[in-house]
Length: 212
Image (cartoon, rainbow, N blue to C red; front, side):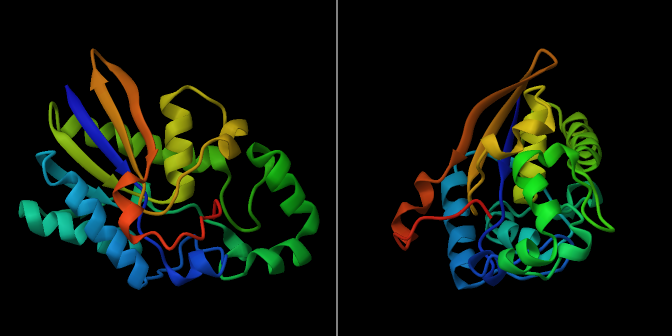
């Protein structure tokens, strides 16, 4: 049986400022580095055999502590890169709501129907990330694998694994630094754990976290 630990990267300043990130290469902030260490501590007894990330710094930096512990190479995978928000990238939540009010309203109500201006749709992100996910599992039979993409990618992957359409996007939460566990047995993916943040309790600031 393969075990896939699907993790969201740690916090960045743009998460705190509610700024759309997408393909812009933002590093972890101090809290994000603490989350990366906490993820590493949570997975040290899981016998991780391979580590794959998005090519963006925030994912790679999140993987570095656990990669160092297991003496593993971090393998960036283009298919796991964040969604292309197009013209929304670099804008804050409030700026997007003001400049693209109709599109943002649709994003909240029917996320499956929106194409970000000069960017992707959720279904396009789902298709290429799930293809990358399945290829990684195929290359690592029976191993415990760590994958570190992004909030949107994690959500659409979980939808794909559960055979849910992208209309369910907002019904899945992925906090920064969270851990999901997917088991692969008899050609079936089984979701065993979702959005686990127990390992982050000691470093949480008590303010809670928006889904952003």
